[in-house]
Amino acid sequence: MRRTRTENRPKGGILAVIAMLMIGSAAIRIGFEAGPALAKGSDPAPSLARKSQPEQPGAQELLTELLRREDTLKKREAALQDKEKALDIADQAIETRLAALQEAEESLRQTLAFAEKAAETDLTRLTDVYQSMKPKDAAALFETMDPGFAAGFLSRMPPDSAAGVLAGLSPEAAYTISVIMAGRNAAAPQE
Image: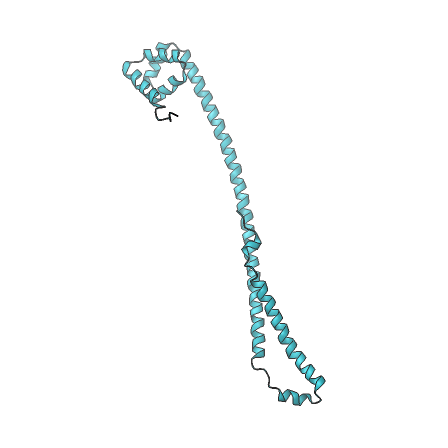
């Protein structure tokens, strides 16, 4: 599930801090520039007013620190935007690869379906060949087959053809093939 950009960002974090810093910076600047201007307008002796008012200690350092923090926050925000762009690019690459994998999976499904159909067609033809043979000739062939393989073909044959082939087999081979055929569905659920 893809998260939207707004879910990834902290709520009210960086922008609120930047806004507070700008408001603080504006208030300090107004204080530094408006104070002397007001003092000039109301006091006939501006030099005495400046000397009589003590300068606020650390105001310039505070302003410098606030500007430094503002710059740091801008750099962090730019870095976050860069990371967000990189994640978007990676997300697009993942979606492209996922689409390619889905296409490959569908192609593989079609190939497997084709192969299964071809195998089923081949088995049906071979079963038809075996059942059209004389039971004695088919029995000689089935006698040399692996019992599991032979049981598969006999299960596909009509009962009268399969019976003719089983009758032509040796008793041991007929028994082994019969046990395999009987046990194939023994583990299937009864209900």
